[in-house]
Image (cartoon, rainbow, N blue to C red; front, top):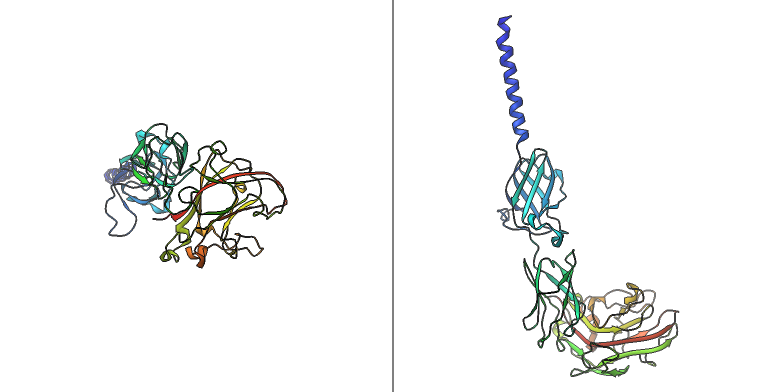
Length: 402
């Protein structure tokens, strides 16, 4: 019996030692050593910062049993097929709500496995703010405007032309897509707006308080108005106005009525050469017509057609019909409308003006006449309109893409 005792004991000890070694391997907590870019060399060096939407590789060890990943404390989906014990390929969530994140967990990456978790210090920040538009590019001091865009997180201030900064009463939404600000006093210059956040400064392509760049008609010092509706300067009718404006007004417009020239429903300009001939072949989407509008009465049918001069064929037109997205549309004061020239369209197969194929180039819209800005309100539906009451000002065209 003794001849078998030692070998059995030794065998048991060896098996136990192996089990202990396996347990040690499985119980090892994860370790993060660095993050690198997912693209091939030469971009495979260690990252020092990353942002939402970026694909990164978390490197270290102990990742095989990963159950959760967090960036800035925000849960992050991952594909288990894209991880190994030493690497995890993962996209930082593009929809990360920075405004509602726990400040204590900012600039961290956490990996949770069945064997433990690790927290690694690493800056995960959004790019600077993107300013795409403003509700009123020509608002007066004291008026509240909304700036639309992205990455409005941890906003420190909004800077108006002339370096006039606003640091208080800044209202942002959790998604970081808009910010409200009160226009400060003392603005005498024109130029872009800037939004300064904890992560950088973004500047707008659109211009604030600018009554000259690309201006077709502001009905004051640049006045190409030819004929149509009355031109007025009455702040009691449309408060917040900047001098004169075109007033489209008419009561009891019948259904299917196209007689815009007989009423007070048209704006015809004599503007010419508003863009250099060298830009006619440029993409239409890179330019926009802008105008300021004030809609006093609820708008629920009819269309404001914008297009070529009266005697030209109606090739490319734009249909401004905001009531289709906002029933009974009206404005609380002046707003700025931006229409990319690519939204000027041919007649559709069914004969609808502005309902067909879009313009590709600037020249498609302007044509050989190099003339634009004809506004015509028509009722192309069978529903009568009790009252039309709209003001239009500051019709302009300029490049909207840097």
